[in-house]
Length: 170
Ligand SMILES: [Fe+2]
Ligand SMILES: [Fe+2]
Image (cartoon, rainbow, N blue to C red):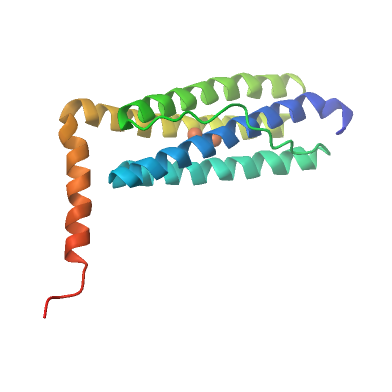
């Protein structure tokens, strides 16, 4: 076990790792299916976000090891097999909202246990998760504004790129 007085922090940091690992898996699943359906913008957004969540795992893990704990690397739940882009965005925004809420509470718990560094880590994560929420929320708004055309345009964009990048005709 870790430094005794920091066991509570280690538990919370590991809970956050479990949360981040699920987000990485879920967003990569969304990335693969958006890519498969030709929705490049969403595919890239999910991949970019998954990479940022991986960075979060790293920050959390470094802190756990510093406190002489170990990184459990458990995943908090199962990947949802959602293939509809609107449902993906709804799911992702919900996950970000939950994480931000949890991290706010856990920042306060770390503070109450006189662990201001872990508190700061959670606070920084809240800011990132709120940004992620905002990005997914904006995409949902665009969908409402532009309807099915929004996705059709992304697919057309890809076709244009593909058709213009082939070898020139002889
Ligand atoms: Fe995260
Ligand atoms: Fe996030």
